[in-house]
Length: 317
Image (cartoon, rainbow, N blue to C red; front, side, top):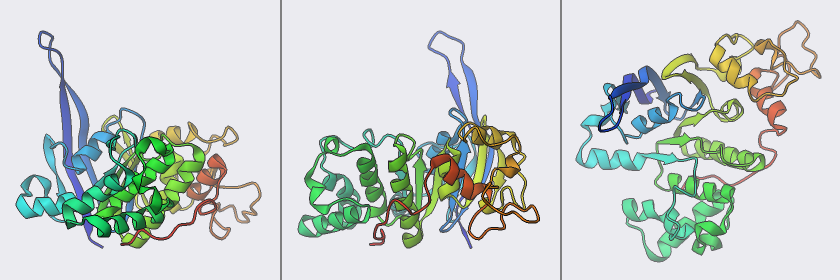
């Protein structure tokens, strides 16, 4: 399977200091190397201030790297011009943490979701309303609500509107920067299930950025852990954690322990072993469909099971 995005030796720094003060350079990213395959979801995990959102901005082309390159489908983002750049803008979308800050408060839900359809497909009138209504239904909202303003929706509903907007242009890559961090637990479950279903049906790739190990383990296929601008750990198979692959990265361990219940012991390689499971030979993952770190962290830390709280039609259009 080919890579849709490659981050190759990327470094990024910012200058600090006022007009009369001494200027210093703050190194935010240091020699970052990541790849995302077509249709895959890479979870980028790190604490606040580690540089993960800066990396997201570089992948989106909002800022250039100081050195290294961001490659999209074998093309350096800095070389894209004309029609190539226009296509890339359509194919790469983003969902931000602050849904209220990501929309125009004077736009209706229909205008928010329909904006990329108007820009890229030149839709208007009844055909535009029909497409917008369909997208709203597919994220669990009523199509008849497309004339409502943002303040008339809850936080979870408005985030679903942002998701519908991001999928309106049939993207190949979606960057989700703390997309569920501001939501309550029930809304997180709904939004994560919508995103997972959207990815399955559309075939889009995700870069899912979060400080929360629970949501990363629920939605991602691959994991990269960041600390102080550097990648400290990567795995291409989250299901192997705590089973065939032992957890030794101190950053991952500290982030996991910060959010897991106090009943979890000091050994992270036993986090996936449930007391109710007959582990037999001692392997944590012998029960069908679970028993590993990935499955039990979400279930036991959140109190929810995947797919139990939301079912929606697909997002394919």
